[in-house]
Image 1 (cartoon, rainbow, N blue to C red):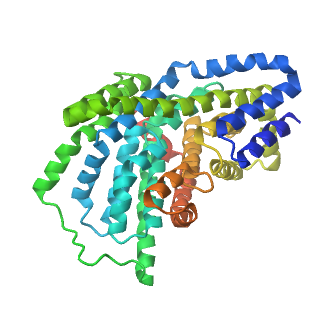
Image 2 (tube, helix red, strand yellow):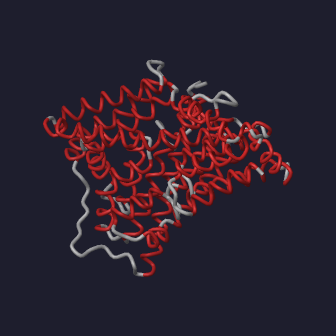
Length: 441
C-alpha cells in the first residue's frame, strides 16, 4: 500500500507537469502523513539537510560554476574553431566537429544541458549552413550534449557514488575513469548515425549544399593558431583528471581548481569582459546549483521511505520472481531506466532507483562501477528522449524547431545510443578496462 501511494502520487504529479522536486516532496509527505501521522513529518528537515551536507556533493556547485565560466569566457568558441580547423574540411566534417567539441566541453562542464547551450548556438547554424536540416542539426547537438554526464568529470557520477555509497562502496575516481570509453563510444555511434542520415537524405535528394559554399582545408598556420587559442580549454580536462589520478587532489578539490583556472583563463583572454560577466556567472551558477540541491534534498526523503518501508526489497524480489536469468534481468533494468529517463531527471532517478536496483546488482555479482555506467548511459539517453528530455528543449529553442520535429530527428541517435548501452551492459570490460589499467580503486 505504501509503495502504491508513494509511486502513484509521484507519477500522477509528474504527468500533471508538476516540477520533479515538488512531486518527490509531496509524494513523500503524503506517505509520511498516512503512515506516521503529522509527527512523522519532523524527520523530513533532518533528512533533507543531511542529504546535502556532504563534502562529496561540494563538487557539484564548483563543477557547475566551472562550466558556466568556460561558456561565458568563450572557451567553447575556441574549441569549435580548433576542431573546425582540424576536420572541418572533410565530408561530414561539421558532424565530427560537433561531436568532438561536445566531448571536450563535456569534460569541462559535466552537464548535458550546459553542453548543448554552450555549443548549440554556433554549431546548429553551422550544420544548417552545411546542408543539414534544422531538426537533424538540433538532434545531433542534443544527443552529443548528453555525453556530458558520461564523460568525466560528471555530476551524475558524483550523485550515483553518494547514493550507492549507503549500500556499497563506490568511488568517484573509479566511476570517472569508467565513463571515458563508453562516452567515446557514444560519440562514435552518433557520428555513424549522422553519416547514415546524410547518406539517406542524399539518396532522396533532400541533402543539398547551399550554392557557392566553399569548404577548404585550413593551412598549417591556421591549425596552429586555432590550437594555441584552444589550448587553455584543452588543458582543463588534463588538469582536472591528471590531478585526480595523479593523487594531487580529490574530485571536490579538482572542481575548485577548475573554477580558479577558469577565472584566470577568462581574465587572461578577455580581461575587462570577464570582470563585467563575473556577477552574471555566479548568479547563473547559483541558480543551477539550487535546482540540483533542491532535487537532491527532496529525492533523499523519497529514497528514505523506499528503504525504510522495505519497498526496495519488495520490488527487487518482484523482479527476481519474473526471472533469474542475469541477461534478462539486466535487459529489464535497462527498459525500466530508459522509460524512467524519458520522464524524470537523472538526479531524481538515482535516488529513486538505486536503492531498488542495487540489491539486484549485488545478487548478480555485477561490478557496482559497471552498474553506475549502465545507469548513467540510460539516463543520458533520457536527456534527448521525448517527452521530457531537457537537451531536446534547449536544442529546439536554439534551432527554432518545435519539439515534434526535433523528436523525429533524434530517432537515429537514440537507436545508436541504445546500441552502445547494450555493449556497455553485456561487455563489462568496456567500463572496467581503463580503471583497471590506471589501477584506480
